[in-house]
Length: 224
Image 1 (cartoon, helix red, strand yellow):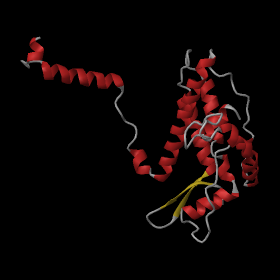
Image 2 (cartoon, one colour; image 1 turned 90 degrees about the vertical axis):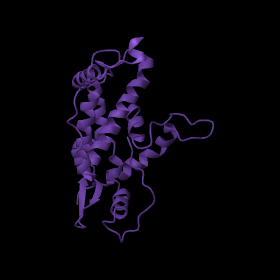
Image 3 (cartoon, one colour; image 1 turned 135 degrees about the vertical axis):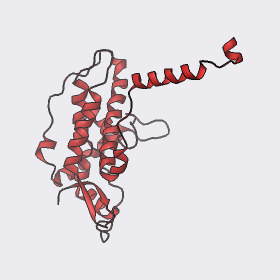
Image 4 (cartoon, helix red, strand yellow; image 1 turned 60 degrees about the horizontal axis):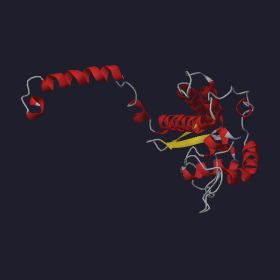
């Protein structure tokens, strides 16, 4: 059985598996599509799309860990006889991508811990070599783990633009992950998305409504 990203129980009682490889590929494509529209002080280009694509492709590599596959089978009820281990970390990855992947569920982490001892990425990464090693044991497909392609230069001109660009990439990854997961877990909700009128159409409808509404109204406000 291929590695599972998610498991859904159908009304028939049967379980449907969301292939992890399919999930990673779909999130990568959607994240790239969303990020290609990012503007950071310059015209939109494909650089952001390439960065987001790799983040999407790697965002759930930790789910290849045998411990996580055991966890998801038990927690979903698909294999209720398995004793589920505790929470298994699955967000693993380097530098910018580490920020995006490590935070794609809980939010962007700080690099350094705060005075209260809050979680920090610099501390989290100390343990991620073991996490990656465990994931590799689970059989990550070569076309995914070997996708360490040369990335284009980030589309930023000034250092202060980095944090904004990073947040935009993060948003693209989170949205892509959510939408692909929703499409598998609740396709009825996915069917409700799309088909919305664009801004020019909405503006025309609004102006028509307002013109009709105030055309003959004799109110104190209009008399002013």
